[in-house]
View (cartoon, rainbow, N blue to C red):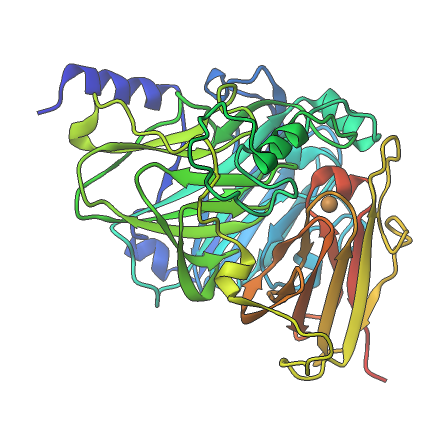
Length: 508
Ligand SMILES: [Cu+2]
């Protein structure tokens, strides 16, 4: 029997339009059988509701942030009528899709921007299957709210008992964002407690150190990093999960015995997110929507900007658990969703540890089984016939440029390929920040990171290139011909020039 309190909670949160997750029931036969899926996406100015915890006017597709969850079955044709009333030019980029180049939504590269008051039809067969997303590729519009999740369902994959999409997004202070673009921000660097200074590794657990500890070497270092103002950091007004900030996020109700599959997207303009579920480990099966060579089980996910992970867990007992992205100051901002069984409505939720110290983090080295590369060792992947090294740079205090080979877009060196080429791109990142590098129109394999060769290359469209280190991609150039941009997905770095392109040129 439903208690009155439960009933009120349910009706209030639904009435307030808190969308803290998006449940994915099986597609109806009618939806799955049609040849064509048609949607209209209309961009307009949008006042964020109170449940976001932010006093903010931005932009939205169809009057909500995130925009509508798009869903097709693999093989269907997708057609979106984009109506632009955003107040400026706009385009939509379909992140992670391999599609005709003129549908890719990059202004002045693949299409003329759609003027305010104009329309554009995007149509293609979404490919490959998996968890993708879409967002504006113009200026700061993505940070203002023009983004959403896009699921291309693979009918060959078994369904979990509960499937949900979680979109992590952060509401920026736009003055601070533009100060960061100018290289003049005074915002603090955000590093969750318990990470090493470079942000990539969880520290070993230190026994006897309380939560306020602070004497132990590396722990002290991460706190020092955290409080350091960085000229390209952005101040955030609130941190949301699918349109609401805790405690306004709507609980996900599960049953004992169920298997739950979460598809988690990091749609933040700039922040890497570290996600943990109290009382559970997470089994990670897909990166950026693509099946991993082997699943890995971890305590916490590390999700760079624009990355996605599919994370599974079993409900083995009644209870209430918080799923949380650990922020630099956990007391200030809770980016959380409550996951609970129906009978645990009045249980105080179990919290995940406030620090990542000692946690098994999802890293590329773990998922791909990294082994140290011996100098001069033979190349295990066979010869790539196009090889390019890209040097990431910039970001010095007061300098508004983020560069590739010392240049900013559109003056960065381009990568020419021919259909059928086997391409290797090697990144060197001597800067003090991780860069979430993204290639349009391809799924590449991450084959090396931080000097470790991955025994199991990871199929991805975006990877963090770690601060002070390296990463290497390999891919077969067999996408539709055209100009495919390659850029940092940190919005500040993108706007400050960190972009180049892979160009398909005709074989002569
Ligand atoms: Cu970057």
